[in-house]
Image (cartoon, rainbow, N blue to C red):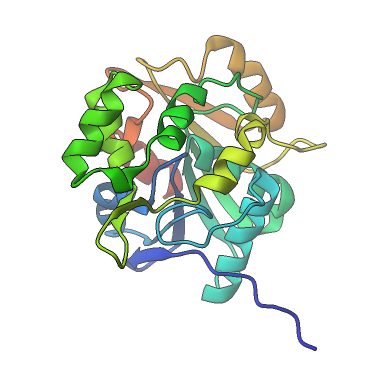
Length: 259
C-alpha cells in the first residue's frame, strides 16, 4: 500500500521573484496578510498560508509547532519550493522559528512578528473560552455573534476578528470554520516554547509592537541566544498586530531585510 499523502495547506499566491511564505497567528487566517502580501508581491513570489485548524486548511487533533512546521515543509514540497523566506506573526512566528530549527537548509531569512521563542503564560485562555462556549448556530448573523461575545471579550476589534472565523453550513446556519476541538485540546502546545537544541545561523528580523507586551526587554537575550544574528526592531504606535497597525513601516522593514 502507498503512503497517505500529507494534506496540503490552503494558500494564496501572487507575484514573482524570491519566494516568501506568510504565516498567521492563532484564530487568524491568511486573509489578515492580504494587504501586506499584495505589496510584497511587487518584489517577491508571496505565498500566504492557512495553518492547520485555521481558514480553509484541514482540521486535526494533532496541533503543535513541530507538526505545523512539517505542514509548511509539505507545502513547499508540493509547490516545488526548495528554499524560502518565512514571515510569521505570533503563533505563526513560532511555527516559523520551529521550521528554522527542524528544516534549517530550507530557510533563507526569517521575520518574526511580535513573539519570542519562550513559553508564554496562558494569556489567551479567556479568548479561547469565549469561542468554545458560544454556539454560533444560535445566532442569525455575524453582528449578533459579535454582540454575544461582548460579555467575555470587551474589545470590539477582537470580537470582529473572531467573527471572521464564521461560515454558513449547508443548512444555512452559522458555524465556526476553525478546527476548534484540535485547538482547544492542545492549549498547552500553543503556549509552548520553540524546541531547538542548537543555535540557528539564519539572518533573522524580530519586529515588535511598542504597544504590545508580547516581546519584552527580557526576551532579547533568549532571542539572540537562539538566533545569534537576530536584529530586533520595535515599531512605535503598533500593537500586537504590527502588520495591521503600521503596514507602511512593516513592509519597508521586511522588504529591506529580505532584499
